[in-house]
Length: 565
Image (tube, rainbow, N blue to C red; front, top):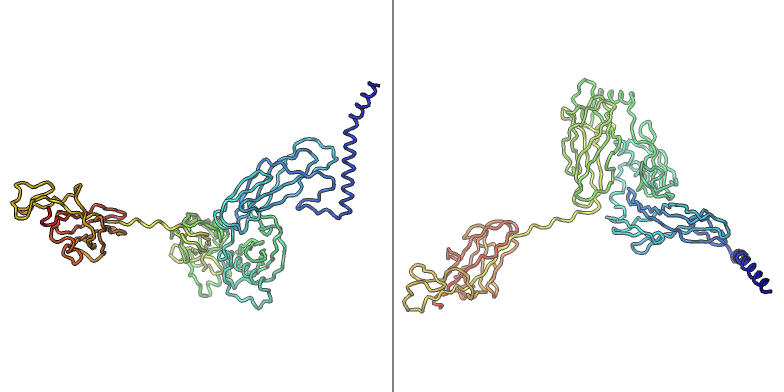
């Protein structure tokens, strides 16, 4: 019986895991039934619904990297790398919360409870967008399941109204039947096209506008290496005609983001060139005169192709150096030689050199890149500078229908540079003291040699003009300051304090005269009778020169009272 009992226990031990599994399955099925009777389970977002009985966990994160996209407002993308513990586990929901300057991102996992899985690590990476628009400047931390990184915004991540408002359009479209919002969008698209083609505003016409939803914040027209926020962006599709060509532009619903779907380039055909030449021969007045031609039919004209650097509304820090490069095409009939120049026309020059020689010879139909080094202004604001060509004869020309318009750049300085510190001012100071000389009593013969602290002057002894230990100071007297060499006064007035110290400060570099008049109404009761021992001139005046920031602190005056011991 003993051996049979042990055999039965052994069998029960073997069956126990199976029994536990059956109980768990029964409980899960019961939970499913209860869940269905209580109502539908809310769907976790943004992933697919989690099936009843699945095991929900937290993903293991190995590394977090933050990317700041080259756009404004700046878009923030978080790349989280990690691994899943087996081949059954999948990424579940992804949620983002913000607490002060910290973004908390939680990535969950989902695994079927009853599946048979292979325990192999499966790597994954998730790209998560953070809504950073409107954040103030500062340092922000991102934690993905406890693993973190941080990023910094050097300026407030908010569009500056003046930098995104479309420029005024002279043409009145109010009577077109558009809504107020559509008018804004149409003006923005019209402005971009006219500026991009280098033509007059009235020469471009609106064909149509229709609402559209674009797949991302770049309106589905991302440039090479540009990262865009992946969210549906409502906006408009605008068709605009210029001459024989129709251009399609995309906008967001505010008109702040406008992107051309059609390349903004005017094709110069032989017919267009012949028409331009014929127009010139008719004597029609041009805004910019043609250059001195190499041949009678030679005409100078350009068209804008592309901003190679510093696109419009680029944000550049105050006082920062940068290089602007335009790509332009020779659509005239003259060859641009290296005797041609690029010159500043109007607006903000931003320290750009003018004239700048043509970097190479440019035949008709060929492109050239024009680069000018500049420096952003020191004050916050939007700045626009206009530039033009100048041929060998000194005649200006540019882009546009008649080759009369300048090309430009437009930048935004988001914050003014700190003001440089004020240069230090000069100051003058010193003391007035009683210059002691023990020369005997009145009516008594003078000693044969000068007593201590005395010198002989004109058959008498007076103080030696040296401030020595134990000599008292004289306070309360009036001191004047004048500009230039002595005698000069009238610039400033001060009084010695109780310790005999005076001071003139906040002085510009230059020469000054300091005077103490013992016979002034204020000074007579303090000094008379007596005489000056220092300075050596013994007239109570000193001429002192100071440089910027200089501080001369020993402009002293010594006074010997008559009849004093």
